[in-house]
Length: 95
Image (cartoon, rainbow, N blue to C red):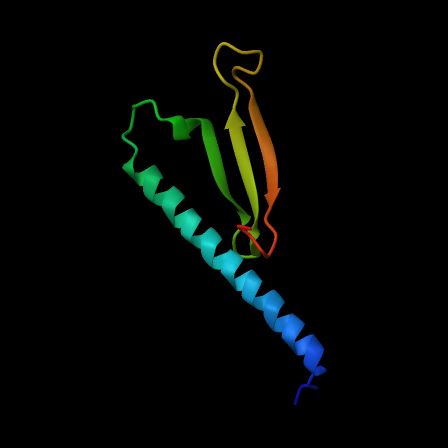
Protein backbone atom coordinates (compact mmCIF):
# COMPACT_ATOMS: atom_id res chain seq x y z
CA UNK A 1 0.00 0.00 0.00
CA UNK A 2 0.85 3.68 0.19
CA UNK A 3 3.23 4.85 2.87
CA UNK A 4 1.51 6.71 5.70
CA UNK A 5 2.76 10.29 6.18
CA UNK A 6 3.78 11.42 9.65
CA UNK A 7 0.86 12.60 11.85
CA UNK A 8 1.58 16.34 11.50
CA UNK A 9 1.69 16.11 7.70
CA UNK A 10 -1.59 14.19 7.59
CA UNK A 11 -3.35 16.96 9.53
CA UNK A 12 -1.91 19.61 7.20
CA UNK A 13 -2.89 17.62 4.12
CA UNK A 14 -6.44 17.18 5.42
CA UNK A 15 -6.67 20.91 6.15
CA UNK A 16 -5.48 21.80 2.64
CA UNK A 17 -7.86 19.32 1.04
CA UNK A 18 -10.84 20.54 3.09
CA UNK A 19 -10.13 24.16 2.07
CA UNK A 20 -9.71 23.12 -1.56
CA UNK A 21 -12.97 21.16 -1.53
CA UNK A 22 -14.76 24.11 0.05
CA UNK A 23 -13.44 26.45 -2.64
CA UNK A 24 -14.41 24.05 -5.43
CA UNK A 25 -17.91 23.61 -4.00
CA UNK A 26 -18.41 27.37 -3.69
CA UNK A 27 -17.09 28.09 -7.21
CA UNK A 28 -19.31 25.40 -8.73
CA UNK A 29 -22.30 26.98 -7.00
CA UNK A 30 -21.35 30.39 -8.36
CA UNK A 31 -20.98 28.94 -11.86
CA UNK A 32 -24.48 27.43 -11.56
CA UNK A 33 -25.82 30.86 -10.53
CA UNK A 34 -24.13 32.47 -13.57
CA UNK A 35 -25.70 29.88 -15.86
CA UNK A 36 -29.12 30.33 -14.25
CA UNK A 37 -29.01 34.13 -14.68
CA UNK A 38 -27.88 33.73 -18.28
CA UNK A 39 -30.92 31.55 -19.06
CA UNK A 40 -33.27 34.12 -17.45
CA UNK A 41 -32.03 36.97 -19.68
CA UNK A 42 -34.50 37.83 -22.41
CA UNK A 43 -33.12 37.97 -25.96
CA UNK A 44 -32.82 41.48 -27.37
CA UNK A 45 -33.03 43.24 -24.01
CA UNK A 46 -30.16 45.25 -22.60
CA UNK A 47 -28.72 43.32 -19.70
CA UNK A 48 -25.82 44.46 -17.51
CA UNK A 49 -24.51 40.87 -17.72
CA UNK A 50 -23.99 41.37 -21.46
CA UNK A 51 -20.99 43.52 -20.56
CA UNK A 52 -19.32 40.78 -18.51
CA UNK A 53 -18.41 37.22 -19.42
CA UNK A 54 -17.08 35.12 -16.54
CA UNK A 55 -16.33 31.41 -16.76
CA UNK A 56 -13.76 28.89 -15.56
CA UNK A 57 -10.82 28.88 -17.99
CA UNK A 58 -10.68 25.08 -18.21
CA UNK A 59 -13.25 23.54 -15.85
CA UNK A 60 -12.13 19.97 -16.52
CA UNK A 61 -8.62 20.90 -15.31
CA UNK A 62 -9.33 23.35 -12.44
CA UNK A 63 -12.31 25.42 -11.39
CA UNK A 64 -9.94 27.67 -9.43
CA UNK A 65 -8.81 29.44 -12.65
CA UNK A 66 -11.31 31.78 -14.33
CA UNK A 67 -11.35 34.11 -17.33
CA UNK A 68 -13.37 37.32 -17.46
CA UNK A 69 -14.10 39.45 -20.51
CA UNK A 70 -15.30 42.99 -19.80
CA UNK A 71 -16.79 45.33 -22.37
CA UNK A 72 -15.62 48.93 -22.11
CA UNK A 73 -18.29 51.33 -20.83
CA UNK A 74 -20.11 53.51 -23.37
CA UNK A 75 -19.09 57.16 -23.73
CA UNK A 76 -15.60 56.44 -22.43
CA UNK A 77 -12.20 56.00 -24.05
CA UNK A 78 -12.71 52.25 -23.52
CA UNK A 79 -15.99 52.04 -25.48
CA UNK A 80 -15.97 49.14 -28.00
CA UNK A 81 -13.00 47.60 -26.21
CA UNK A 82 -12.99 44.12 -24.71
CA UNK A 83 -10.65 43.50 -21.82
CA UNK A 84 -9.57 40.07 -20.64
CA UNK A 85 -8.76 39.22 -17.04
CA UNK A 86 -7.31 36.03 -15.63
CA UNK A 87 -8.53 35.23 -12.13
CA UNK A 88 -6.90 32.64 -9.90
CA UNK A 89 -8.80 31.72 -6.74
CA UNK A 90 -6.85 30.32 -3.84
CA UNK A 91 -7.88 27.10 -2.14
CA UNK A 92 -9.22 29.15 0.80
CA UNK A 93 -11.68 31.04 -1.43
CA UNK A 94 -13.93 32.90 -0.57
CA UNK A 95 -11.95 34.07 2.47
